Length: 365
Image (tube, rainbow, N blue to C red; front, side, top):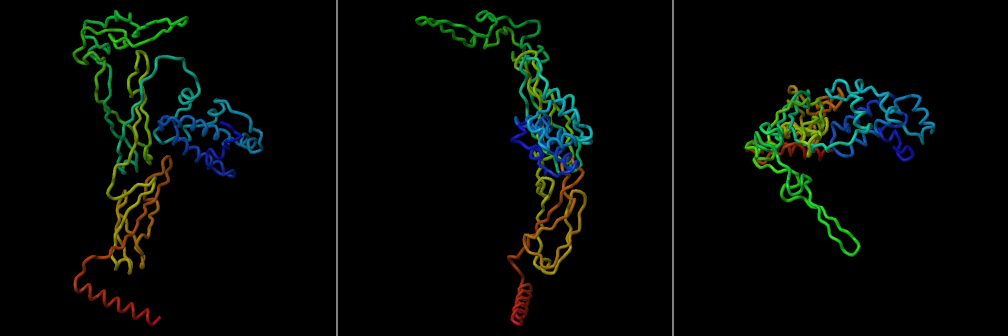
């Protein structure tokens, strides 16, 4: 991170006089949002490193004092400095996530030897009801993906046979052609049409996979949805993506994207829930007590006398949990005053009487 152009307080989104708890809370919230295991976007890893570096400085009183004094403006921190003082168990404990510092450190900072390319990641959407978002819990996802054929072991050849080396490209999968123009030698590479670039030919295909070496199977997996899971939260399941394109490569990962199931009672906005309640004119004028549903049990709500359309009433703590926190959002009730389109003769007589009374009262004022 460029300490000259990127302020650590700005990175965490906190004021410069923030206390230690505020720094920890900000890091926890942002780290949950950008942890590479929970956010599959390409920018998440770099953002997480930036957040961790800012926290490593501001959470340590000595480093923070030096930074505030300008002494660290041109200094960078090693990865060991960044992760050495972060207690992931303390910060993320109780969420059911695997936030081990050692494994994450290896993935983000240590170089691994080059090897066969890994398989591509898969994303699936899991619709979760509000009740599950409220309490957290396990859910089931079903994923159909190509897997090695059990009958041929992934070779594509029928039992008792093996793929043969392509006699046209000698197993290279490519053909080379050369031509010379003046003093320049041109060499062109093209995919071998006989073997399709595989370098081998299957003379007797496996009857189960028809020579592809893979079959599509549905896999049932159990995932744990954390309480307060935010819309679009990505839950990573390592090794359950697509197979590697070449032998020996690791498979990709599966990312389960959490989306909230539609609920006719509420509209979700972050940790808050919204509900529309319709009342009649008498209740709006005189006031009333109505029963409204919540995620646990119905609640009694007092409608003040003189309530207008679009008045918003708030039930504190009746929304969803804030992700990574025990604190809950609110249930907000928008009031709509309904004007009847059709009324009886008796109702008309009463409304006309009410209008006359109102006109007389205004005239006296």
